[in-house]
Length: 302
Image (cartoon, rainbow, N blue to C red; front, side, top):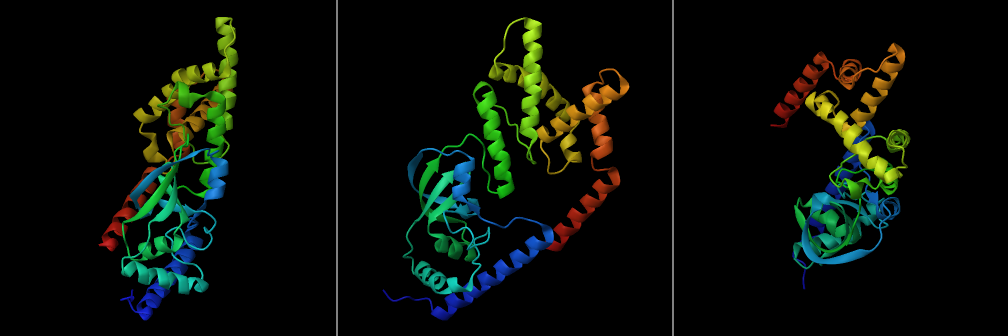
């Protein structure tokens, strides 16, 4: 079959994709934003993935392809090519795609994300052409923690800690509705210490032993849920953009403990919540400036 798309046109598309990759790299250096693809091998290890199941051929969103098996260093997060040496193969794929003879790619699905097992260049060409989806043979791995398209390598460390937390507490079994998610590492261990103290208190009050998962379930119902309700009623998340209810839970509990030690009596959680907002939240002028900036950016985008 003769290829209808001229080679020169494909080369031009490749150079445009390379230029976009260079811009993404520059912007990432300035903003600190992560534009790296996730290595599937690391995801497999940190999320303790086990058996896979073949799900057939499906149209999958290109925006949810976030990583690769072995070739994650060759493309940016948007699958723009990073190396000039990739040109010949990229152009061959581009011309075949233009003629409609591209095969389905092969992917692993984990949570709400996909990792390319075969077909990285096909994904790159499709992203450059601004397609919204691509045909793929899908193998799915089950995971106990959510994996979203904006997950970074740093997020994987937190998710690994989350898995250890769930292994110890079994809260995903006893309280499947729970969504305890942090934005920084180390917080799950702090919760485990809280649960251990609560376990000791329960055993002393009821004069019987409580195993750790049982104590964790009571802690979730009586402590965590109660504080999160206060956080929700106060609408605290608006004062802490980018944070989660679990982040705020830890801050409020820490602050309540520190205030109680300082004043010599148990300070109510509601008072501790107000102190956290006053001391660490976005102040009124900052919120106004943030809203003004967002409005100007939206106007400029038009």
